[in-house]
Each structure stands twice: as C-alpha cells, then as structure tokens.
Image 1 (cartoon, one colour):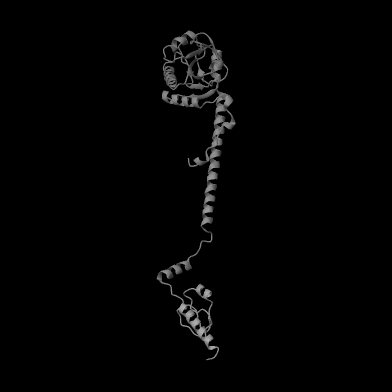
Image 2 (cartoon, helix red, strand yellow):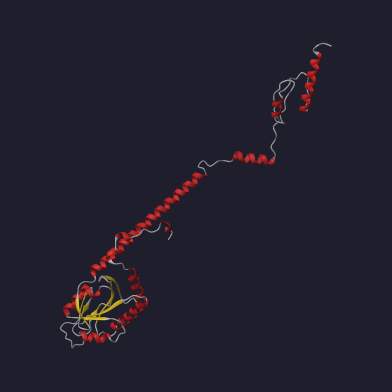
Length: 310
C-alpha cells in the first residue's frame, strides 16, 4: 500500500457523503461543490456534474387552455392613447366651463331686470304725483305732505256718479279691510273731479254711505282740482258753461293710485283688478317697499352659483 492510498480512501468517503446529501448519482472525478452555494440553488435546477457544470435548458411548458386565452386577449388588447384620466379631466373641464357660462348669463339677466325695474320705478315716480292743495270734508287744508308717514290709496270720482264710483268705493272698502287684517294700515282718499257741485259738506255726506274706515274726502276750486288731476295724470271732463244746478255727467279716469309713506307714486290699479286681486298686489308692493335712503345700487345680489338649473 502506497502512502497516497489512505488519502484517496478519505476523499472517496467525503464524496460519498456529499452525493448522499444531494441524492443524485455521483462520480469520483467530479470536484467537490461548495455546500453553501449548492443549497442556494433552486430545486428545479438540473446541473451536469460530470462535464459542463452548466444549467440544462429547461423544456418550455405549453400553456393550458385558460392561460392561452388570457395570453391572446392581453396580446391583442389596444390601450387608449388618451387614457382614462385624460378623458375624465377633459369632461370635467367642459362641464365646468358650461356651468360658468350659464352662471354669467343668469347674472347678466338679473342685472338687466334689476336696472329695468329701477328705471320703471323712477319713470313712474317722475310722471305721477306732485304738489297739490285741496280742502277735506271737514274744511281743513290737505296737501301732498299729508300723504307722508303712511301708505295712501287715492281714487278720483264725483258724488253724483250713477254707478262706477259707488262700485269702486265699495271695492276700496273691501281692500282697506283686507289690508287691515294683514296688519297693514293704509289711508283711503277720495278726490272729487266735480268741484262745482261737490263742496266739503256734500263730499262728507256722500262718504258716510260707504263703510270705509278713515277715508278722507277732498275737493276745492276748479283750478286746484284741475292742477291735482294734472299732477296725477287723471283725465276728467265737464260740459262747458255748466252751473252747480245743472244735471251733467263728469267723464274721468277710473284708477286707484297707491302712494308710499314718502308721498311718492308706487303703482296704479285699474278696473281689471277685483277687490281680492288688488289687495294681493297692494300687499306685495307694500311689503316690498324700501325707503329711499336705504335704496342703493349695491343692494342688488347676484344669484347663487348652485341654482343654475332653476
């Protein structure tokens, strides 16, 4: 036995132990592998321990039916070049732009309506109403200053009117009572268009036939009555060269004039309004009325942005 024989035997035993750990066929000519590196290899690695010590090419597995279908769908799917978020952002932008345009149009319409309303109010105030001086049913002086501090409802007529004036005064009585139920105090006024026959005592006796609380009857000279009717744009006409003893009819306008507590004109109501309709409209005007000192252009408020659908 040579001196190298024990070393060869020890080497073969070491190889045997190593190969038993690997549970694979071994060869005495294969060099020893690093145990730490071999344990890091995956179980599916197939090494050629005798010749190349390289991985064998693994056989390609054919995909099953489900995997192949999924693979084909994924392969043929085309992606949207814009992308979902780009489309959503564009829609949000277009919608927001439409809302902004609609809102600006609503604001412009509201501004135009507000200006038109102010022009209408100023136009009415400039044309109807003004200074006058008449005599009430008790002989006292009554001027435009007596219209202040309360709303007034004025009617022009004459005491010998056969049918129209009594009907309108009955309507005035209902209007005044309805407004009082709503807590609105209004001053009813009757102005005669027939100063020749309607003296203060005649007017006082005539108004006693109507249940109108607090009504004021006014008359005066022909010149004063004519000036008052002209200020309120009231048409009236009497036959020429008549006297108080003559029997004649006075042609005149048939309107109720609503005046505010500052003595300014608010609105006019013709015969097309019945008592209920006139009460509702007068109540709206009174509740909407604002003193002149509080009326400012800045009082206009823009419509809410979120009410664009209304």
